[in-house]
Length: 204
Length: 246
Image (cartoon, each protein chain N blue to C red):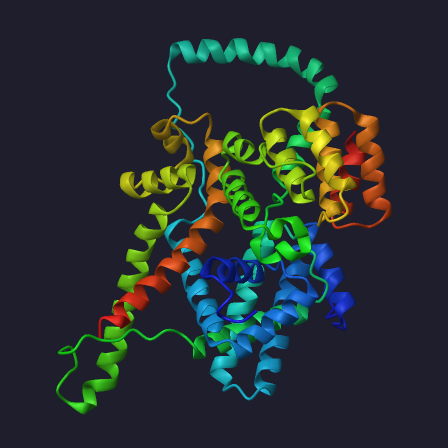
């Protein structure tokens, strides 16, 4: 397939082709969006490895959301939007929350200090993220809470089995409700992470 | 918006819309500005993205599991009878290949993202929703609608006094469609379209068209679908596909 001259219009045309199921157009577009985003980030003076990482992340987000929504968007400037995602991920990472380590957990030698702190912080952050999930589920609206609690407690993720356990009408009802509840869970989870981080850091 | 007037829920809702490619060009511009200038908001962008990745890992999209088939003598007999019936049925099936308008409507309905009350946009949606009581009710109704609890959503929305904001009629209409109260849904979508402050009127027109289709009022549905196609609105392509089927 010949490489098109990429403009806002040709990107839009590739999106429309992808919406109709043209996988080749979609793949070509993804490659272009990655390269364009990476180049734009390099112009913002990001180191090459970070430019690649954030361009990759942004393109993966585009791919996931595009597939999930079946390409039903009102975006006009895709290049700009994907770049905005990459750029904002980079800016957000610079403001990422720090997990304060408890006193007495610091190693004795300075040479171990940095690696140990990073590992301890990462582990503590992971623990907070996991704990936040439990908290978030407890705060969902009733049907969502029932669904996610059941999945976690029963360790069951198959729609047909969940239908039986929950006594719902059909497996479709399970999948539709799961789709509808997930955005709520993500927001509640993020809020819970923030609360737990604040609590953790206030203890020190 | 400065950090004192935003709530975490409001920020995370906006951030979610950002990562869902739902922001308009102006909203995107404001969002970029906010990330650059508001450290708390930038931190929340990072947290949300981490949360989203974690949730998707913990709860990947569900797949149906096929049940294993158990064959025995009675199953083979049933299979033979079934094949004979199938041959006769194929003839009848030829005439039944076209989905009914209701089936077409349902398929399109469930592929459409629901329109929900968004507290971050309440000044755009309607001035009357700046009343905190109403906006709280609308948020609760939206949550219930989003969770599939349609009776609950309607019980919250029904007491809201008229004349109501456009979004109230949109939410009522969606809940009523799900509950099979199609004439009421049609009435509410029409009220939403008549209201000067309803956002996303093109989507409301689409929902109204689907509801007409569901009630087999094909002519009314066609009129609206043709309007959507002619104006090249966001649902134009889907509308064109339906027009080819009905």
